[in-house]
Length: 441
Ligand code: SF4
Image (cartoon, rainbow, N blue to C red; front, side, top):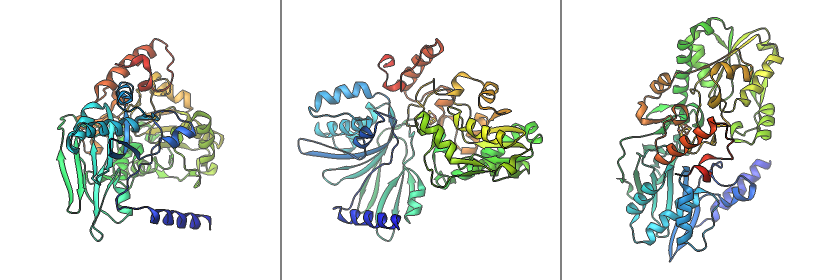
């Protein structure tokens, strides 16, 4: 009964909201402090005003050059309170509007001033509803409409359009601004950038399997990832009895491994239905206990077996370590870890919270060493070429920075290089690289 009451309360609350446009974003913190108060203060949309000009803005991504911009914004807004980079995006655009720029010019100013990933939706005080993407198009953002009610929407993923009965119209292009009126969408290419850089990690981990990019479902790509690894490691496939996935992001690649190898996919790992946190987003202790509660191993299915385990990625390695420990306790004879995302060797500056070298097991260790650390008999990463091919993109349309060390934006590249040098010399990082004073370009 409790969920029903909650649903009614939400509907009642929505019914009280005036107006016909709404924006918001569910974000996990990759900028600013992580305590409860800061997270609530950073809730989107950010709403700000100056000299009668109002702006509400929400965004998906992460800004790299926050520190110099914070200084500029503070000089222009006496009451500016910084909680995280969302405040910077909103105030930078508001400042441009205050200086008399129209919406297109203000979007251009934001695109030219910010280094990072930003897929933005916003509403001005005049009721202009708009969305735009950074010039590299790092984070997804698509547009759709409901033909019956003539309602227009933007969403990071197509799945939310599907679930609300909307037709997907298009994915915004990098550097594109889209405005909405009763006639529909108006698309303006504000900046043309020849180096696109869509986050490749979306395909392997972040996006929902039932979302589509360029007409292809994410689950289809993940199945292809599984097929690729089978072709890349035939000897280990021959030496295996069954497949098991790390649910749920490893499920679709397990299907691909099953179809390509003919091995049985055993549902030997079960996910606790009510533990919903994404493990690598959590803080250390929380993470360990969440993984422990979240994944259960069905002992009889793995006892005495040589098992291929499909996993989307290895970031810190602790998720997989806990699972493999449980498998060993249940009697698994061999554990071969098939990882669909290539080895992560560098931090992300664009909205995935793996923001220092020290937290990445792949930054310090090769696959053999990683296998020892997590207790596997082998760790087999899908090749970069296999991943790129399965996405249907080319290498210069994707961001692969955390795998290759080549960052699509200049500030991120400079900071990553500066911190990597220190890291290799034994320096201990303190928090996120892009928030560190020491490596600001
Ligand atoms: S660095 Fe990695 S996780 Fe971050 S945007 Fe690029 S591909 Fe995605």
